[in-house]
Each structure stands twice: as structure tokens, then as C-alpha cells.
Amino acid sequence: MNEPRRDTVFINDLRVKTIVGVWAWERVVPQIVHIDLELAADAAVAAATDNLEHTIDYHAVASRVTAFVEASTFQLIETMAEQIAGILTGEFDLPWVRVTIHKTWAVAGYRDVGIAVERGER
Image (cartoon, rainbow, N blue to C red; front, side, top):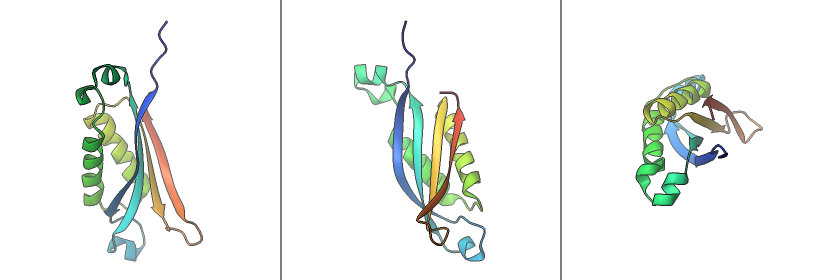
């Protein structure tokens, strides 16, 4: 019996400047959010063929997410994470994703706060 594949392609610390937040200054001063992506993959065919066509093109994913976030003006990082997950599962036909957004220095006394959402089936 074959074990199910649990391979994961990941992109860590994708840094994107955007307008995000609820405070008046956040609506005009761009901030950098740090985004981590985990994407369900089956790397067996890609590994056997050594061919990009058989795996997730992380450059294409990172470029799409960057363009989306740069153009966004969300108040909440929860909304941003949810919509990124929808792009990844929809446009890249991924069965499962985990999107983590870090908003560094958003709260005095903390280095990092954020949200992680998982969507789809592993």
C-alpha cells in the first residue's frame, strides 16, 4: 500500500510593503508584512523528472502574492490571509495551503503578531 504524499513547498519571509491596519496613520503609511506560505505538493514526479512543470513554481506563487498584497488596502491581516489562501487554492489549484502573515511591531512591547490560516484538505 502506498503512503499518501505529504510534501510541502514553502516560501518563508516574503516581505511586502502595503497599506494595512485600522489606525489613521496605517491608512496612509505603508508597512512591511512578512508572509510565510506552505503549499501541499506531491514532489515525486518532479523529483523523478527534474522538471519544473511537475511541481509548484514558487517564483510564480511569490510574484502573484506580492502583486496582490502590494495593491491591497485591507484593514485586517485576517482578510489579507483569507484572500491569499483563496488565490492559492483557486488560481494555482492547490488542495491545501497555510498562509501566515506577520505584522511586526504592530503592538508596543511585542516584536511580532500575526495570523495563520489553513484552507483545503491535506
